[in-house]
Image 1 (spheres, helix red, strand yellow):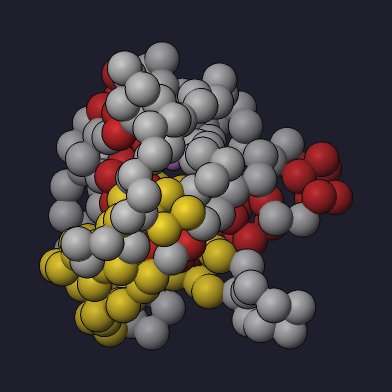
Image 2: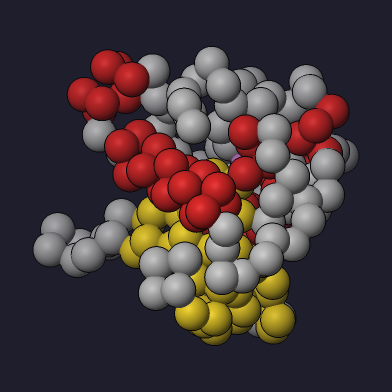
Length: 186
Ligand code: NI
């Protein structure tokens, strides 16, 4: 499937609020190909030259609903923190958060989303640590992922899309930059 800035569903389209449905695992060929294309999009979007050539917008994750497809499929690529560290790749079906830390975290620069062309300023508080159960399309096995910090935030952002939530739903409209001294700023 062609994924670029022209095919991604924006927040002015009510489809983005759809609840996505579980997919059958092991994945059908159709779902596997879709998830593969989503992962490829995220990988390529982190290359400046490919962005220009293929009309991509940089991303660390994408959910199928952002292509108008209400299926629980999520692709995430978080660049390694250090120069020689490997990127974290996730191609997940039916991801579900099964536990969350009491400790919260947020991104100092705020969040962004391929489906939100006009960035909304504000702190988006999420759990610092999470445990996610999913079917991993790379190893073709059910997995339990423990994530903390930035990768945990990205996973929560993508999993939110599966229930039709956007990051700015979590910004306090009265006080967008409200500080929580107990939360970890990332
Ligand atoms: Ni998003």
